[in-house]
Every structure is written in C-alpha cells, then in structure tokens.
Image 1 (tube, rainbow, N blue to C red):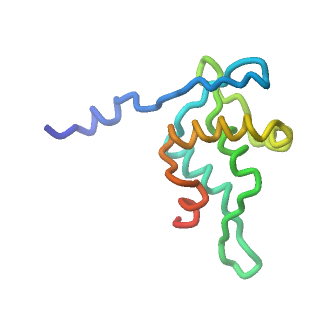
Image 2 (cartoon, one colour; image 1 turned 180 degrees about the vertical axis):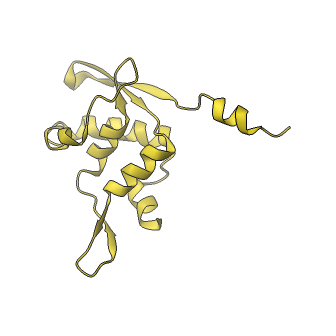
Amino acid sequence: MSLTKDAILAANDLTSETVACPEWGGDVVVRSMTGTQRDAYEGTLMVRADDGQYRVDTENMKVKLVVFTAVDDAGNPLFSAEDIPALSGKSAAVIERLAAAASRLSGLGKTATEEAAKN
C-alpha cells in the first residue's frame, strides 16, 4: 500500500540524539535537518570564485553542521551563524562528535562536501 500525500506530510520524521559532551559538562541534543535546512547548510559550503564558478569551501564545515543541528530541549536552535567564530574555537573532538551524529541523523553520506560539490 502506497502512502498518501497527507500521510507523508503528517509523518514526524525528524529524529534526535543526545550526545555526551563531558568536556563541556553535559549533553547536547542533535536533531536531523529538514530538507530546507540541508539545502541551506550545503549552500554555506559553496563560494563563487573569481572566474564565476562555484567551489566547495570547507572552512568551519563541521561547526556549521553543529549550528544547523544542535537544539535545546524544546527543539529550538542552540546556535546561529553569529556563533560560528566562537564555536570554532571549541574542542575539535567535541565538534567532531556532534558533527558525526548530525551527519548520520541527516543522511549526509560520506561527507557533506561531496554532496555540495555534486549540487
């Protein structure tokens, strides 16, 4: 039996995972991205070169992923784009742990840069 449009749109398909961050003194909840969020995230990884062509920019790639996926207990984003410089100064091990969970939950595949390059 195939799904109806209403069934698909009504499905609660966002998942989350609590990631232990003892270095920060607690846990961080990471939630899967919506389609819109994923497109926006991948857009942050693209820059237009002087020749007009787009290229992948991996600067703060994992920090940006954390910004797009870390939420509070009510599901509200913990961070915004303005927090990227400060968050990028935090432990790479913690950022990696959070980004790995976010990548897995959001179906990013091997790496987000490969996906962005394809688009």
